[in-house]
Length: 317
Image: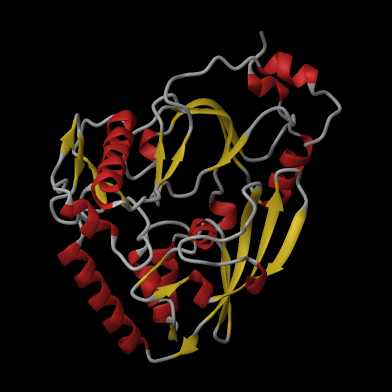
């Protein structure tokens, strides 16, 4: 049987088979990408998506700071936007930002250029694209407060330009389709002296360091806060702070953080998270929703792509 790679179109970017993904995430767990594709630029991405076999699933991976990749890895194609999507252009108080720009990096650059409104981003280690899709936020601000417009490419290679008001932003969520890949965004701030911006950022970082396990292998908040409550208080109330399972731990410092203490598997982490959900539901009646995004399969899958591709030949998704 031929490998999946043999069915994929030629590209200018980097494409590899069986790439371990544990070092691509902040939790440092997970199996391999069956194929990992890092497009050179938007044209390379569009070319690839228009010609890829429709029978093969596509998964987008950003900075890996808010994801848990399961031990069996991710079947199909994993797309990671690299250097070609890290450009930043400024005009007045508006920025055009590539989707793979790290939010903290952008916040620092904006601060030194005297544009405020992005200070909260300095504590978010993920990419701008991932943050927009999840409407990530903290300190009373989120991406919906700064976003003007996005450019995206769907899994069939079609381009979409959409204003922020049509992206359905709610708490830690948006209506951006799962088969879209954000490539650029336009965001707006306010002119302010750099020293004032940097002072606010320093205060945010001090607060984070004092209240969250920032120096550990974690993926940020484990669960979304239910309406009118906080997830950490619910987890703490049922006695789970500091609980261990294998190499996984619910943080002693902040009960809504899941930590890889050094030898956890993805299964350890996901199982402990699910046990926390079950106990909170049983004892408080509140159902918590995962904020960490879980990707892939628990165990390696046999993927007979040759037969699936042949069966779907000529059929578009």
